Image (cartoon, rainbow, N blue to C red; front, side, top):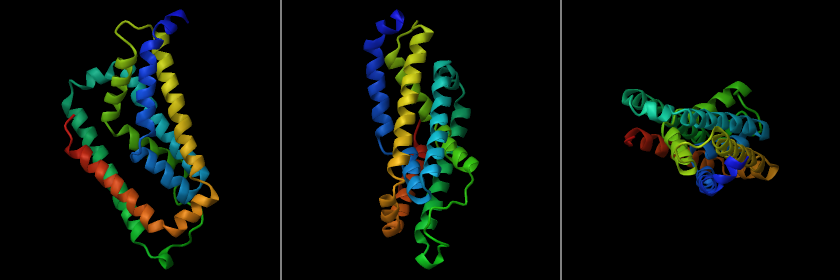
Length: 213
């Protein structure tokens, strides 16, 4: 415990950096919000869990030094970047198609989903794990909070604290935007909401495809 306390001055800035990143609107946050509004609390929470697991995957990879290893395999990262960008564009197309549907073409605007719990979970996981920049974000967080030679307990504290905070925030979004008021807003502005989500997904996908790692 004493070892962890000694590293607290470095750990707190990393926590703050992580919280700012998690709270900032992006594909993951918009996916949780959109799913919770349109399909209800359960669907939003399952999606949040999938995204959280994707974050945990990159966090553990960064802690194990896999980020440094991946840097030497540019082709693997490039493939991952293309896959992530195309997947976001696909989600953008799906949202655009939903926005273009007329009211009478929809089966109903009740909270039902054609996606199973497994599909919702995997969709959330895929959104986060196909973004290669996430692993570098985690590498930056760990580098910021832990200097070389830091003990394993300190690494566990920073990863555990960040992941717990992220899970709390993601599930909080799902609960907040799954209320009956949120559903009424969705019913009134469905096209605008789906259109905004389509724009976010397409922008993020194109940015990922054209960015340099």
